[in-house]
Each structure stands twice: as C-alpha cells, then as structure tokens.
Amino acid sequence: METIVSHIYHSPIGQISITAEDNCISELIFLNEAGHTDHYSTDEDLPAVIHQCVDELMEYFAGTRREFTVPINQAGTDFQQRVWKELYEIPFGKTISYADLAKKLGDPKVIRAAASANGKNKIAIIVPCHRIIGTDQSLVGYAWGKARKRWLLQHEFRLALGVQTLF
Image 1 (cartoon, rainbow, N blue to C red):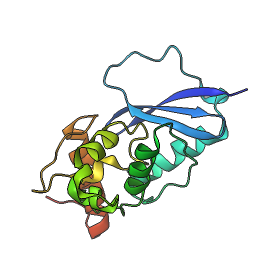
Image 2: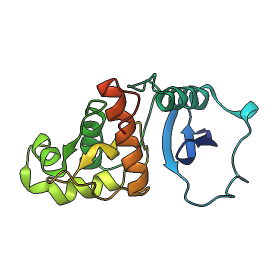
Image 3: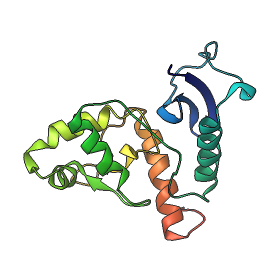
Image 4: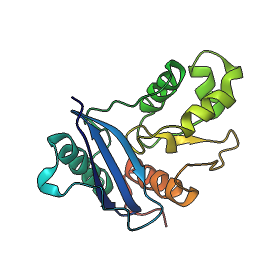
C-alpha cells in the first residue's frame, strides 16, 4: 500500500508543499495561496524522506548545498522523464536555453515539447527547471513566478561565483 504524506516548508521565497510517496519525494511545489494546511502532516508524523528533503532545502537556501541527494520519483511520460533527467544534469549556477535543452534531447525541433515538459515539472528546485532561460538570456516563464526564478538564479550565481552579494 502506497503511503502519501505532505508537509509545508516555509522557505525564504514562499511556502513549499513537499509530498512523499513511500520513500521518495513525488512533488515539491510553491504554494501561491496561504492557508492550505489542513491536509498536511505535523512534524512528528513525517517520514524520513521529508525530513531529509527539508534539511537539504535548508542547506540549499543557506548556501551550503549545491546538489540534492533526497530520492525523487515524479510521474510522467517517457519524454517528460527524459526532459527532467536533462534538467537534473544542469550544474548549479549554470543555465541553458530551451534550444540547448532540445539539442541535448537529440532533436532541435522539440523546443516547444521540451518547454511544455519543463513546465510540467512538479519537483521544483531539486529538478532545476528554473535554470532554463530564453535563447536571448531572458527569464522566460516559470510556473511559480519570475520573481522566484530570478531569486533562485541569483542565489546560485552568487554562490557559484563565491561572492556574498551581487549588488
């Protein structure tokens, strides 16, 4: 029997809903509305995988973690899985364009399909869909808002460059 547990983590850029199915994180999404806590587990009810995810997120936001080790398992088509695997491979502090992503998938013509799969990613930050930008270096769409995308990229760039602040 599959066990599904959800928890809200209060990050520096908003509430994040973390869902675990059995021993893997299956969803990590930003909540855009406050007050949706009635179906979430309390800390003492949480499985180890959610504790690990929260610990790793805290380290990420504190600037001491660049890679995640928490197990993940996201449902999706074979193509979506390929896209998400490519996203997972983008190094911390780096970005690629949708065109680059399509090329990595082996077909430069799948830009729109790759963008669609990127937008369906439900494991934010860990599967770093925020690292995809426009060919012209613009901050193109992000399911959880461009302000969050900008924050995440600036956070990673600052740490990758080894500086305390960009300003």
